[in-house]
Amino acid sequence: MTGTRARTRRVLPGFGLSLGYTLLYLGLIVLLPLSAAFIKASGLGWTAFWHAVTEPRVLATYRLTFGAALLAAATNALFGLLVAWVLVRYRFPARRLVDALVDLPFALPTAVAGIALTAVYSRNGWIGRLLEPLGIQVAFTPLGVIVALTFIGLPFVVRTVQPVLQDLDSELEEAAASLGASRWQTFRRVILPHLAPALITGFALAFARAVGEYGSVIFIAGNVPMVSEITPLLIITKLEQYDYAGAAAIAVVMLVASFVLLMLINGLQHRARRGEALGA
Amino acid sequence: MTTATLDAPVVTSERPAVRWLLTGVALAFLGLFLVVPLAAVFASALRKGIDVYVASIAEPDALAAVRLTLLIAAVAVPLNMAFGIAAAWAVARFEFRGKRVLVALIDLPFSVSPVVAGLIYMLIFGAQGWLGPWLNAHGVKVVFAVPGMVLATVFVTFPFVARELIPLLQAQGSEEEEAARILGASGWQTFWRVTLPNIKWGLLYGVILCNARAMGEFGAVSVVSGHIRGQTNTLPLHVEILYNEYNFAAAFAVASLLALLALVTLALKTAVEWRVARQHAGSVAESAGPRVKP
Image 1: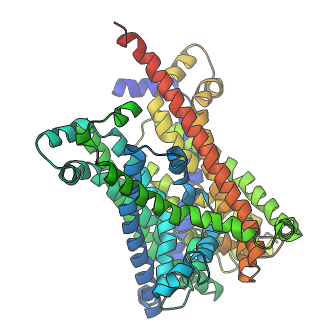
Image 2: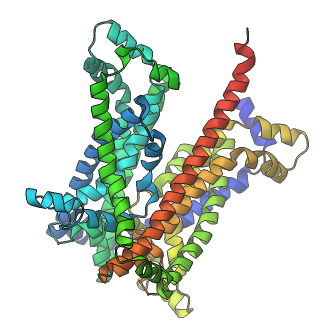
């Protein structure tokens, strides 16, 4: 192992140049600017910082942002699993087209998604018109936020579950069936436990993306303070009032939340890979 | 693969009725969340007729937005491409301490809210920022101008190329490059003649995704743009302005350009995926060939 390393280092050039450039670019574009948020917020002092991030209006945005992101990620976990299952296991016309279309939310600019969803779900929109007699209002309500976040997070669960489902050994299912398990029992007891790490990873990725989302939400949310205002919008509001420190303080809360999520996701993916290696 | 699924015994599949039901629900979900909004963009864009559509796109402010969007992508994408290649080379070809931390840090911008990405550049280059007064004194504009918008775009598209190339280079191993070196190729020759041809599809894939996000970014660019019509307006920002002016037909007309960009991105991306899958299947069959022969 060490022998290979030493030889690689000697034979292949460019270690200093590539790593140096990587670290410099990472530092200048990402790490230094991110540290600016922490330094600006720390200028407030602890009491003012705590006050800035726990104002009732700010707390209301956390509830909406994290709550809606959680519900959207849960919706995506359920339907994403179903979509992955159908795409991997069944054959139907235009299956490859549908498969390619799943990535639309990654490719469609969020502002376009925002105005499109608003048009569809507003009172005289294609779907909003059908929901109106039922007394359901989506656009300009918290429900609209959940719809936008579901759209944004849709590909994550499908794309994490799909490869695992593809590689799943059918022998396990045959064994379960030959031991007398019903199809549903096989799914619950054999297939689902195998998919669980990928499913949870996809859920966490969708949740993390939804928490920070801005473009698709602001058009459909209505943006009423205390009701349908998301945290990223409040950061922009503070900036427009030249309250840079207040904006930085809320940004620090969001950054810490996303760091925690990132570490969680890394841990999950690490465990999933190790599980795969052990299973093989 | 396909035949195995088709001819699968009944014990490992569901009854036809269940299959149809599940397929129906999945397709209904995708139709409701993907197809309907996409169709709505084009329907709303053309609602007032083709003349209004063309006029909304050919209008000077819209054309200025197209130019700025192309300019920002033309700067941000090559920057992240060069970074992605350098980072992948360092991570996949050498062992060093803190490698896992570095890989995690490269992915960091994906988990940062676009609004926060814009904010951090305001804190550095804005009027109240660290460098603001100095920049002001020297007549350099970064925020509320194109440089700031490029920086914000570079931040949000930072990981795209690197995260495609790192696993690809790791999987390929360094035997071919070592052989080239031993045969007397210089470092750059090895890179151009051996490494680059091996990673070209992965690189293209990363660049396609990076470009789509660069052209479509809204939140981060919105914070640092200052929304000066005709000057610091990208296509997504122009859509917002038109929409907030209740000029829905024009907003959706410009949005339809971005939706077309998304469809082209999906088509290119899928084409690259199929090509790589075919290549992969081909090379597996080749290497498996002699051993399978009786």
